[in-house]
Each structure stands twice: as structure tokens, then as C-alpha cells.
Length: 243
Image 1: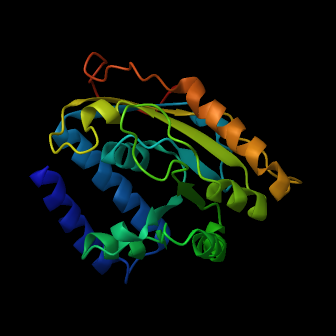
Image 2: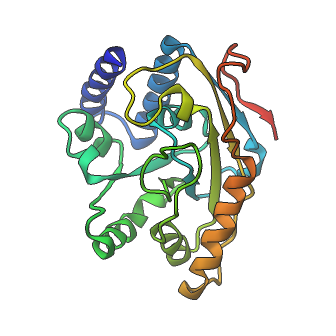
């Protein structure tokens, strides 16, 4: 955990300095390389399934399940698209780490102000140009038991307002590698699976409940609460293992 903290601080400093000289795409690549390096040092491998479901150049509202801090690293490493994080205000307010997140284009929201949070996200829609996507955890926080928590409506309201497709993503492994409340990171394997994109064009706010449940069902389809990351192949991390 100490190494992860030190690596995060170093990346934050590098990102803050680099942001004055390079583009958002360059910073995104830098973040991905950092995430892969940290996972490798921690002895954590990852695999990506379903990458062929992503249309190059298309913007998405990416909605992964949230098991622990480790899915943050796995998603940054594995997803073959450029995306910006939507994160709670507490994270982006942290010295260096939070500042670094904001410099790479992360959107900060205050979860205590639901309506204002949606307005902030909608105002950030301009960041979705040129093939950029937004990644939002629909659960809002990490699971305590490996199962899905109730979904919040914000991500789906944003998808309908922008007309962008929802991209469900399922992570298996982070929950047992770093359980909520633990400081002990175990070596293991994380599986990232991309579900079928869900079209939102021509949908209205009346369709939010159905869109939410459809997304939840697609994520749950690949979720395995009994997944054992310590019995999986911990060899080299790789790309699309199964389209």
C-alpha cells in the first residue's frame, strides 16, 4: 500500500507538470502506462474480454461495477478507449493526487448535492468530443460483499441527455485482491469484460429505469462473486482474450 501511495504521488507530480506541455490524449497514455506499471509491481495481471464490441472513435458513457481501488488501475490499463473519470469530490480534493486527476480531465462531483452533480456532469459533456468517453461508477461506491449495489440514476440521465451509448463493463477480482477497508493488497488476476453497448438515442427520461435495469443486467451477466483471482493465470497481462 505504501508503494501504491508513493507511486500515485509521483504520477500526480509528473501529470501536473506534463499537463502544461502535452495534450489530454498524451496524459491519458501516461496514466495507462503508470497503471500497468503499478499492477506489474504488485504482481497483479489482467485480461480484457469483449474489446471488439467497442467502435473506434465512438464516445460512450462507460459504467463499470466498483469492487475496489484495484479496478481503477485495471480499467486504466485495459480499456482500449480514451476516457475521463467522474469521481467524488473527496478524491479530487486530495493534494497532488486530486490535482493530478483534475489535470487529466476528471470531473469532480459532490454526491451530497444530487441535482448539482448532474448539472456538473452535463456541463462536462464538452469533454466528450473527439472520441472521448466518460467513465462513471453507477454504484457510487465500492461493494462490501462482491455483489452489485443499487445503481444511481445520474449516469443514465447523462447518457440520455447526450444520446451516447452506455458501455457496461464488469470487473472480477479486485474485491478479493483489495477488499473494502483493507490495506493489504494481494497478488492475483483481474478480468475486465465489456458487455454489449446499449443505444440511448430517442430515449427520454421516462426510459431511465429501463435503461438502468438493462445496464445492471448486462454487468451482472459477467459478474462472478465466487471468482478466485488467486487461482487464475497470473502470467503477462494481455489484451482482448475473447471478443
